[in-house]
Length: 250
Length: 365
Image 1: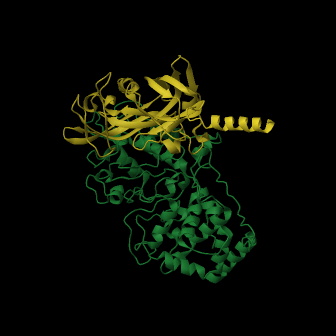
Image 2: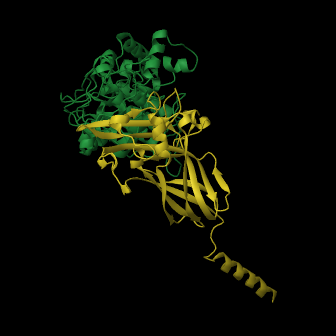
Image 3: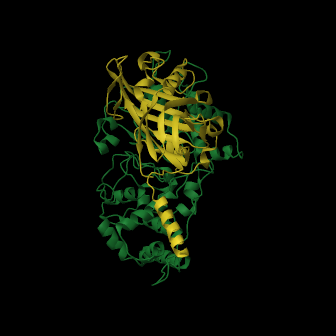
């Protein structure tokens, strides 16, 4: 009889462990960055894009970002911070970013991150980062050299200026230009998922400010630019949006 | 004489690596080589499938300096990549192949390739192991087939021993040749002992002229302002003095060499060439992909006032070089003394170790 009891307990254990309705207690979250222009996928270098508001013809050749300070806000208002989590997003060939396996399974209402780095990370010794670390200069090509910190956003391309293909270049750097990006939504993270984060490239030029390269300036390195970098940062801060949230196999 | 030299090399290899042939059932033991990363350099992403070993580096070095790799055994890799010239071609604008053919691009220096991502001026080679085999087969260079190279190497006892030491068997094939040459090229460094590095380490100080050069190098273009800027650092910043990108710096409005565009067949890539490191510039004239500038002064004059705004696919980073200034002309508007200061600074990047470090030198001498 005792043997039957033990067998019964074991069987209960097996059936319980196979319960498909029971999700994981903690999950990770994969972020998939997707650059779009007027809600459509575009090709870097080759696609000529029409800015609908200003009618400028634009080509993007580069949109690289350094992101940090990722946070998730749960539906009860609690906030999970991901310390020392950095991401390098190369617009033309973005990798996914994985927030670590420490997220309590549940419902979330917001995700946020900083475009740029805090002062400590920005002025860290670039030679200390491992080869595949987002802050390794050889990986991200976003370090200013020994004179300063990192470029937070490197945005480059061409525009048609009186019929001539003319370069534009906006490099956002300096601690004062670190800015928060807040995305709200209903994020069911009861399982392992991938969240699409769209970067709406057209909003670089038309958002809080309407900017035309030929008029407002076609390059900045964030200094001596009559405030162009500040306007670009404000445009960038609301140029991201959340997209689909899909299940994935961990 | 050649036989004598080879005999010395063979003897040396046998002594150094007498345990190279493990024999049956014995594990193949190699000696890991830790790349001495110069201070301030980023951590390199070395190829995970070709971990550096002393044995493979020695094999690569033998191959690099051995003229047996060419059609008539008259040229080695080092013929056009001489360490006494910063691993470039002896000051020549173009290189001459075994049959007298002349190349159409300047020989590139080979230092700090451990941080490289795409190789050759047009970026057409994704790895050093592939790049290593290209000049051997190029009809205007060494003009030999890798099949013939393998056969010739098989007839050399030196290489039987060296391949054994590196790979645990004496089989010789093109892949192993490429991997060994890759290893040798990966360990060639320029950094850590130049005046620039010594200043960073607090051992030396810049002269006033060099210090002005540093400031101009690291300042953005500012043709009508004060201080002015040469805007060098956007492409040549950081410890490597290159961002390893492939761009058009505005040399020509009509292209005779398509550069990357010749590889990809994309119009948007026409005129794009690799941004070279500025380390060891004093060793490596002439300059640019086609060696058009003999001196650094000519290079500075080009960047100061001759960058062409109508050059196809001009790099966005060159915008500052083509802005108009108060004189009605375009460019950086640097004075002669400011340009000379930049040259003085660039000369502090000279690292004599490139021609003195025995690890890089010809093992047959």
